[in-house]
Length: 77
Ligand SMILES: [Zn+2]
Image 1 (cartoon, rainbow, N blue to C red):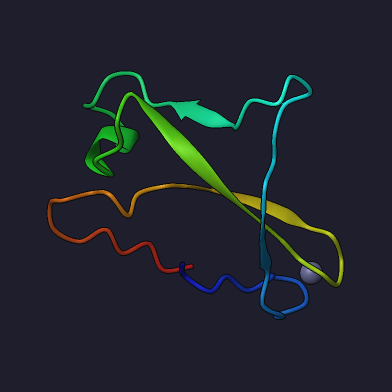
Image 2: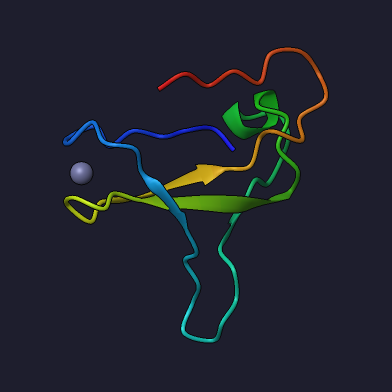
């Protein structure tokens, strides 16, 4: 997993799990593949990775683009 840094504290953020009250993992609806999400190669629904800053509690969600097979999936922060 890619190391994520908090934009405010610059400490390494820790992987965490964000779920709905019903216990479902969060996903984004990518919809059609001709939008920006399509260019990222995302499936119709894509899992989200959550990271949490241990200093300030900021939680960020990242779409799981690692499974993207074509070309550069590089999303530098
Ligand atoms: Zn922070």
